[in-house]
Structures are given as structure tokens and as C-alpha cells.
Image (cartoon, rainbow, N blue to C red):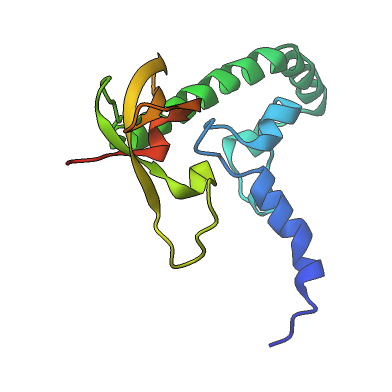
Length: 165
């Protein structure tokens, strides 16, 4: 297979990318930059309404009018993009289960998060158990050893696992 012809195809690929509607905004990158839709070269010989109604003087006037609204269109598309990202985040976050612990619960602490000891590849993944002695913020806990010695820093709930003893 000959791979040296990609340079000849690159302008066509870039043109297709710039004139393709994006899912996040519903607009083409070309229209967000130039405030008008591009006519692809394959569309020119086809007698469409857009091609038949083309008048050079009117076209320049319409382009100037469209440029007045380009900032408004960009702002609207930015709002649509944020809404799309929120919708995607909501879809993925609905499967997330939040871990909560109460004061007095016994928990294991992630050995990688604490880095208390380098146990190597075959060492234990969890250390402890520890007792929850306080809640700093939502999802942040103060721990103490079972003997009662408090641990200096706080720990996120993602680095803890419930201990059933």
C-alpha cells in the first residue's frame, strides 16, 4: 500500500472536518468563524436554490449582516456545548455511588494513597483497620489507629474501604 499520497488528500479532509456539523454545538466550525455556511465544491454544479439565487452584491451585503450576529451565535453555541457536557456528565455520574462513613466506623486505608510503606508488587493493597474519628468536609475523614493514636492528615473517601469486623 502506497502511503505517500496522504499529503494530496489532507486539504479535502480538513475541508470536510471544517464543514461537518458537530454534535456538541450543532454547527460547523466554518460557520462559527465566518458566520455563514460553506458551499462544498461538489455542490456548485448542482442547481440548488442557494446556487441559483446567488448575486454577488447581495451576497456581500448578507455576509456583512451575518458578521454582526457572529458573536451572538458563538455565545449561543457555547451555551449549547455546556448543556451538552452537563447532559453527558449526568449520564455517567448516575452510576457513581458515594461512599459515606460515620464517626466510629472501621475502615481500611489504601496503601498506594498513604505511601506509608513500599510493600512492592505482591504486598497488601489495604492497611489498617482504622477508626473514623471525625468528618472534615463532605467525603473527607479524620482517622485514628485502633489504639487511639490520631493520624495527622485527612483522607478522602475514595482512599477508604469499609472494614467489617
